Length: 276
Image (cartoon, rainbow, N blue to C red; front, side, top):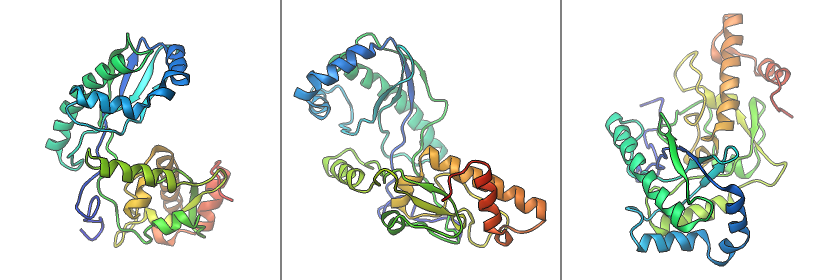
């Protein structure tokens, strides 16, 4: 409890919902692109979703649809569907989410086939072996990265990487208030091209623990900045830094807080990490 932030989520302990990712085939991408250029301008995706809600295509009226990403000539990767009310630290909750996630994909299949052109013959071929969990606990480290650091494009003497993904806190409930809050934050809390903020080495070090390094979405941060650092590029940045730090400490037989961060930064830079 002294190492982890016990709030776990927002002030009401609500967590971002996970997603069960998926793979699909028999997608006509040129037909979909033409549909986007012509018909989607006349009736938006949000309008089509609301129409589907009225016709009970979905069991839950979730307006947030990240979408389908092209992954080949006729294949796509689906980042679609939120599974609300799930706690990623509870095994029974995760099991329930895997079951619900597969059922939910059938609802999205019906939606895509009925409301979006190019997906009429789509078929589900695979679902993720693991759930895409966006949020659980965060450590309390030697430094807590925060929203002001994001806004100020912070520079730290011990930073182990630069990062620029926007604040992306998914709605914790399927209602218009939560969705509009997400849209506003995702639109406003972002950087211009060329701008970034630093991630300090201290965020990888849990308080009161020696020689423990943390990487990924559970590094020491507030909830807003966690909405940025939780995605995969930051996992690469912090993972490489944690591994390099452990190797340097082992080589010198020193503790994590005895590491010369200049030596760490030089090593990371020599291995291709972008550090101004």
